[in-house]
Image 1 (cartoon, rainbow, N blue to C red):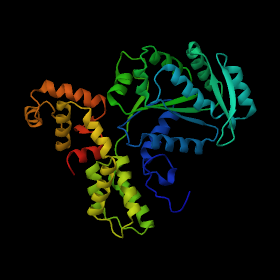
Image 2 (spheres, rainbow, N blue to C red; image 1 turned 90 degrees about the horizontal axis):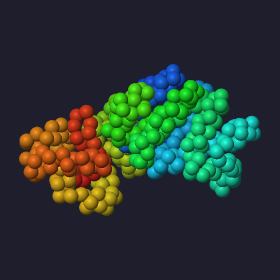
Image 3 (tube, rainbow, N blue to C red; image 1 turned 30 degrees about the vertical axis):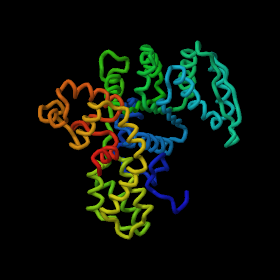
Image 4 (tube, rainbow, N blue to C red; image 1 turned 45 degrees about the horizontal axis):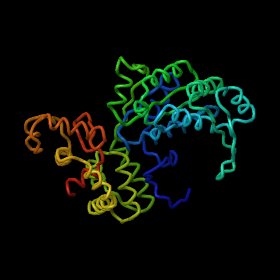
Length: 374
């Protein structure tokens, strides 16, 4: 990677060198998985779940080169068929590195579909793919788990946005997946998701197949001191002075939320002032809000009057702990607490708003600042 690369990555994972802290979280996750405990990883979007998963996988493969790690983001899937195709593609995507023996083993395992090979136009490597009939979906899923179980390798699978399976319209999917997960001792799972209420329901409600089957792991903001040391270290290398009080002000403003912090730090690094000041920080935030203005306006346009009023009221308050209190209902301009609750239900479902231990906040930190006219 170029020496002049901006070290504050906004998207993707660029390796441990550009990964901030999460030492304790990494070790806790590895320990749980290595000791046979599957994990449910919960956090809001853009807090760094995917980066943490990749960091965990990096460390696992460093310690045991024979282990196999798979990351599957099922957010785009709409059915069990989509899920099976995606899982099969990711799992079989390692075949080109496992040798002829593994390929022959895979061919013998997959009875319900054809295993086809094609050449990747970019890398030139052989790419395996599953060709199966929708009626054979459940059999193919069984084949995939059999392939993993018979591989004789310790496998780690991260299924991101796992709550998406609740949108499939098939109540049997959870039970089906649970039946395979519990009988693969060499395969360890991270089920991650950003919709806290759906994930909690799936793993904490007695009526669901995954009830109490995993260790619950909540991901919070990176500790301020560690984040400053990371940011200041990179700024110093670029001969940029990042005063601690200026960083602290940014951290408090964004509550340390990883993606939003990275977005501002990335622009500050690009500006390369000799000494970062609050005006520089404010300029970066304004530029980001201006670039997102069309999106924010469209987000508002689809809301009803009551939903918009509630969203603005939460943004102005910053955090609302007692959303049904008489004072908040009066200040919001909505007539009754029931009006607040109906509007809140939609805002939570569409992720305009999220519930934190402290109260309700606008999900997108920059959107919240834009609503406040900052």
